[in-house]
Length: 112
Ligand code: 5GP
Ligand code: ZN
Image (tube, rainbow, N blue to C red; front, side):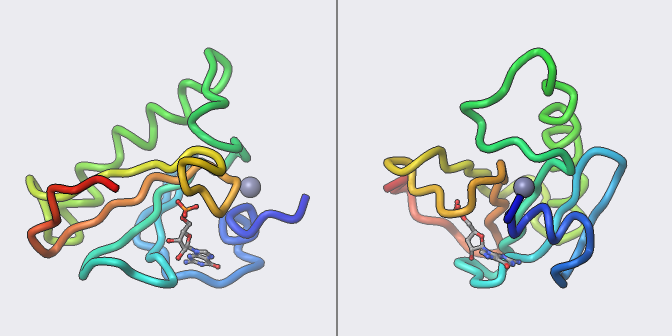
């Protein structure tokens, strides 16, 4: 499968990794939209949050469990935003589930 984030997970595509465990990886966004902009992805290919099921719930739980520690290691503990875009209308451009962690600045209250 031709998936950029599967390539980053396997190491065949270079990235700036900030966290890794057995189920997920976090790396810096190539085109940051805030001083801190990291993507957290499951190692397993899941297309989006729309594909979550009992079978992959542990992968999602691992990501959500890792986020506070990742935020803390990036210096934004207690004040940041987590976003996941879903599908065409949700603005998703990479079809491998990812959670954006954005911080390091007072973010806009607008969500769109
Ligand atoms: P989406 O719009 O799908 O929610 O977000 C995809 C994100 O992936 C964008 O913020 C984009 O900058 C980032 N991105 C796309 N290709 C690469 C890449 O090859 N490496 C890294 N580190 N980020 C990428
Ligand atoms: Zn993938």
